[in-house]
Amino acid sequence: MNEHKEKSKNTDKGKMIWYISIAIGTVFILIGAVYALNGKTLGPLKPLDLIVIGISLYFGPYGMYWNIKNKRIKAIEARLPDFLRDLAEASRFGMTLSDSIIVAANGRYGPLTDEIKKMAAQIEWGVPVKEALESFKERIKTPLVERMITIIIKANESGGNVSDVLHMVSHAALEEQLVEKERVIEMQTYVFVMFIAYGVFLATILILAASFFPEMYKAGSALAGVSTSAGTPVTVNYKLIPEVEFTFVAATLINGLGDGVIAGVLSNGKYESGFFLGFVLFLAGYIFLKLMGLA
Image (cartoon, rainbow, N blue to C red; front, side, top):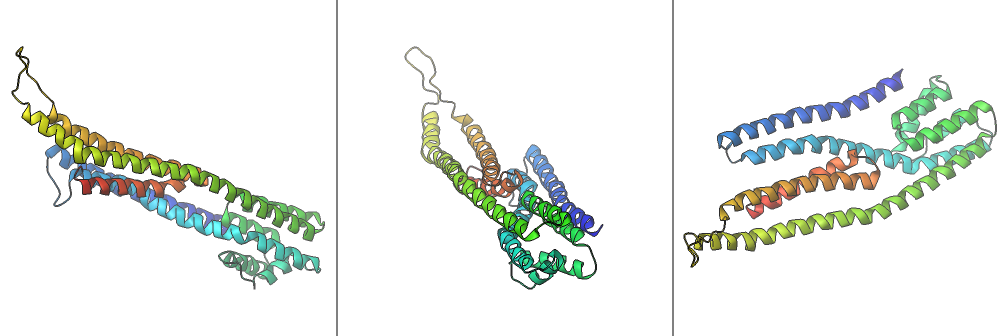
């Protein structure tokens, strides 16, 4: 019952952060839209500033929460093979699985140490080792941990050689982590290319805003009222330049947010991991546009 409450608490915390962020972000967006329709500003903040802040709140807080949580889980998984190997060595000397966990609680396994101590405390209080392991599995709640702990529970219930099973599980966990690291390294190349492409996109906008658009404006102003020999007026619709610039602003924001989310999916296989990257690129792109005077 306690492990389900803890799992529900962690899940509800993440959802609560997301829902509150969405609510506050929506308020900013609505205020920005109202000011934009009325052609007013809120002190030094333009309507677009308020809208960007609102959209950032959709992704930033939850993205930071998820990344912090994910880093902790990854750190725990990184030490899991060491813990399983020590359990196997203790079992080899005749200790039961329960005693092995209690002994392992005195070791140092980084962030995993606290979780092991919780298991050891539950066992010392009389909780069956199966329930203690199930509680551990629910607290971490990752595919790797779920598979490893399920195998250990089945091996312990069957009454076989738990030491050999623990050695096998430890080796399997280590191999899976190595495969995952190789996959992440391979995907980093694509992520790097996406960031470079986004940088090139921003550089292109910078060139257009710094040289092309001003020259077009000058040319349009100079040709105003000029006609050809046939009497046809020569015009350059330079008055549309602000609308074109706004299109570039929107494209930059959408591109930054989309690239960030996709980069997160490529890196970790989950869209949540891309929320923070999308938030960073989204804000970085907008700050870049503000410095250029386009936003």
